[in-house]
Length: 519
Image 1 (cartoon, rainbow, N blue to C red):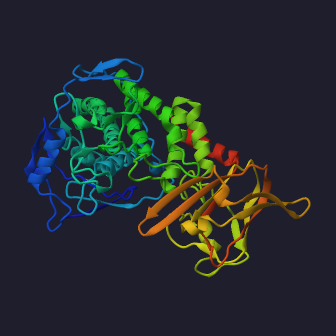
Image 2 (cartoon, rainbow, N blue to C red; image 1 turned 180 degrees about the vertical axis):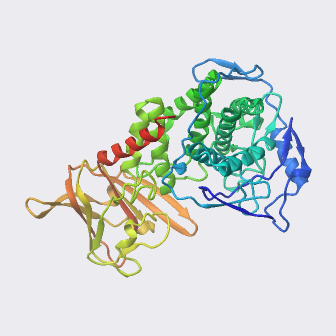
Image 3 (cartoon, rainbow, N blue to C red; image 1 turned 135 degrees about the vertical axis):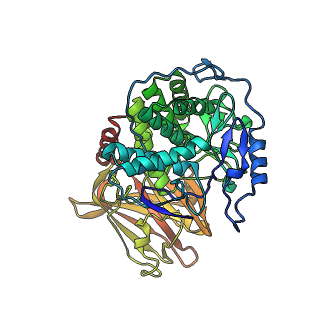
């Protein structure tokens, strides 16, 4: 296969979709590209069977009841009005300051990774390309955009009234067979079609926009990704699982494409979808607050909290939603999540805070300071990797770099259940008297209101304890004294404090407001 190298941002992705022509629920199997000797790929017949199974129960009711009680019949044509000739995609990884990565395109100029096509990544490439074209008028960027659009057009699976882009790879972590749609990719590709229409005014792109929009209200049991939350709430799944998975970031990205259509084409239907999605988000943001981080999803079989990059992505997304809706709850949860963030913040992007949350940690003792020293407590790898440990009484001296106030909580990330049982005390350094002042004692077994969590990454287990700090603290330096013994070893991958970070938070908000000012 001929490979063309072009500079565009990508994220690591594990699922894919191969090129096929989908029209009126029919698949041209001759156009499905399969890789030899790849056991993870399906043969044409099996893929057709999976797709036919998922989409066999066509949604025939044709109507939806939105959160506000209003209804819409998708058998009726949508009304669009051209209000603007330009739109700007919001996506944290499309920032101009970020470095470009190398992307491989196939012979048709379509992004491909490990011989696999992935609707979400193709949408990202398309949006990056059109952004580059609008900024520079680069013919190369324009070509990349329309090469992706060819794939987007040719791989749209449509019925009489609605349609989807689907994945030809299984998603085993979510128990999904091949042939599943996603609100995440639907939003990106919907927005790509919007960009193509605004640029060319070709009716074929408007038709794709209409059917892709109508796809948002098709229930999961009919092959779509819409699932009610409560009886009067609509939710749109990144992974249309049998049991609710409710991935937060995918839903928010999927709604962003809808919002742009509502704004740029004055679509009442798109506005209704976006408003319903926003209301459901607002009603359930609390469910995603794990206190020490945010939850990536609410899949009860995964108990899944967010790894650091997803947690930080949630913060930026919530700030974005605050800027476009002016709903204060999005700002409040963005701040809450930000104060539970650890280490650095989105290094190398426009949101890079330059200085880490904790400047330095020293220990009075460690079992192996070279391999298992305090350097492991602030590297951001709370879910795996090395740790700091001690089998006797030990002190951790923590320098925050500046005086902090309004301490709410402390979070410890242990490597074992045993480590959780080690009691400890917290002290704060008084700069005036030059003394350490006692703040609070934590006897783990006796604390009833502690928040606990568990994470497993590969073979690495992490046991999380999150404790409230009740006493008022104003300090730059803190000290933790652990009562560890040979029989009760303390071993931590990471530690964190929740305290006021208003100044840094306002900087992030300003950056997001500046970035989205033209949306």
